[in-house]
Length: 391
Image 1 (tube, one colour):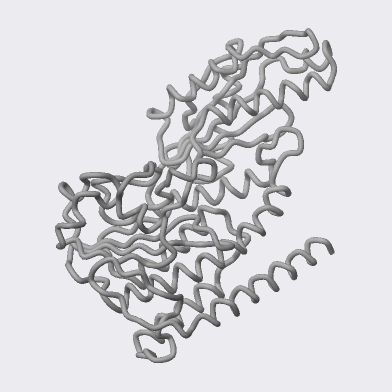
Image 2: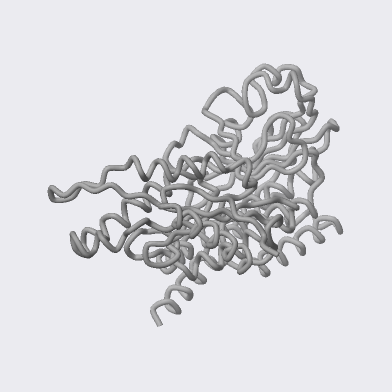
């Protein structure tokens, strides 16, 4: 009942924000070819009801109606980029979010198209650039890059216009609850690309997107609580299975590889037997922190059960990630557990399996990584073994 009540509350908030956006229909003005801040969301919505415009609004309404807020952040980003691919023309699309802890740092959440200058996960510190002009503004910013006066500062970082010759740039901030959390940027090698319809449509989309993200973030707080293991704060077993399946689908869709690691603490029972279960809980929490610190933000770490853990390393292979796996194991061996005057050293055994090389299904990959992990156990633990398919 409590969850149902929250869902109703979120729906009411969303509806009210939608009404608020709709009430801004009175803005006037058209985007120009150089740095033009668009005065309001949905500008000209009542006067420019062209077939193209109505078609875009119809697609936007369908996107909003089909969007499932129970999706993961990765799936939400996929939905956003899919919509942009179908409704905008660009040679490069960049979805940017501000770092949650460092507001003067922006991170490329997703990059589509041209990637010779930068790719996903690239971080941009505050400097004089078109990116920060968009993030610091309240409305869309359209730049004709054939105007040399805009070439000095750079698009995303200083000097990048010299090596990467885009002619059109438009960025629209994404705002939730009155604050900017990121932006969408479209770029084209053709000049004058975003002077009218697509520039207007991007502004409308980013405004709607801000409302949807605000709704998703509120729901995500509840979802995250249900997904987490109460002791360690890592994903619990059920949530891990769901996320792993999602990552396998994503890897299949984009023809990527990923690595599964299964890890188990060596001789953990002696901790509970010697120092008690509270000390054992302390060791599990400390182990979780070591594992979490040893991977990237895009990777998945979960408590699989008891003293066993699982890690999914996305967009990589066993060969590329083997040294990282070794570092994780060594980091735990080097970690000093000390509580109430009692000091212990722990080690962990790990096995690896790769999608799709070792298998395409979750069960097969877990079995292969598990077998490799127990091979390490048989050698005394504290090591990593690369799993292989057995005939």
